[in-house]
Image (cartoon, rainbow over all chains, first blue to last red; front, top):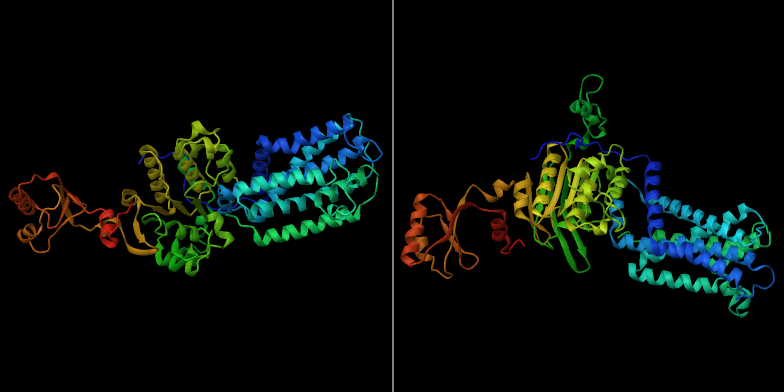
Length: 259
Length: 332
């Protein structure tokens, strides 16, 4: 046996760290992982900013009256929330399950609720960075925000819950590769059909009621009515998002497989 | 100085040994329970029975090796103890508790057979993260130094070699200063140097009073590390004991020669109670009172057969021989 390293006292001294410290450590790791991941940054920052700048400057879309940038900023904010809470979380969690990371973390004192809280904290952290960048770019493009910040923040929080639930639902049931493909596909479909850059009024009357029930449409519509039209709390979009959140998170808690 | 600091360090795992107000040592039921106690465990996956009525007990403060070929049910058994899987039948107690008990998590360290680390996570980053989940962790840097990972502290997990990944997983299993460590094939894929570093660490864990349960299909590892060896095959315990009791005091004489020699004549010449067999072809094993007389008988018989005994040696039985005898199959 080699000489003892005085710094390594292996005598048992078990004990969990305080809950807050565990969550903060895991949230920090999740946040670093998200900011380090190039493909994810493309989805979360580059695409939203390009869409905002491109469609604001070039008269490619008819936003049905009003200034293009005032229409676009709320939609792009909603897209940013979806990209992080849904697409990013679905893909990352799918691969964490595949690589046994969720299993290994399950053997530490960090509880499942602690892990969920850490993931949520990291998602909100990335969303804050996204919102800051989008707001700065929007203001530079002449965006004039209306309405209450709190109303918009509430929509973002409930929207984040709904999209996280849907992302985890996908990650918990599909294989990692299938999740990767499906999450990107859903992102593209919802980008096109959720009123992000193309107004829902451009779609046929027959499909519009269905499209309005999509979580992305509820979030873009809600944010637009607050930030572009200065409405108070948009109750219908908020209710739609809340229903998606309750359904998806409820299903996640029943079906999610950690391995 | 270090020793003093060590004694002063808070050690909740042993607080119940500290004398109480009247100088008496308060007795805790949990202390009497074994590190792991499994009775009649059954685990099925679809139509396959992976664990089939397995019973074993791992003592506190000892190294218990679960030895068996691939597919014997080692990993299933360990993962049930770790709380990852639920048994289909039987009872499992870890430190006296149901493996699903959340309070157990801080007290056990786990090394999975593979993976468990995000591929982009840097080596030191992962160990620091895991350390922050515990109240009194080992200093991550010291552990990295000890396991030869200091030069790779900033390397992402996916770019570590297989052996480095194994060592990082081992470091993460012990960083929280657990009472009980589960190591699932800790030295699989390690080069000899890293394997010895791992063995040394397991030895030190034992010296420090940590209970260790490890799985392996290397009999040399089990012989070298374990206080108690449990040999399992097809989901059942086929033998258990200390390496010495399992291999027995008996020695054996081995040699190589041309295959297919008739052993009857040799057996007639040997003292009663001896045994002779050819396994595998061309490898001969003679068991019994191995001494000068037996050696003379064997060499005389070789001369009569007109063969030269190659690589003639007198050895103790190995765990591999025990396994082969019990199951009729090779360990690997």
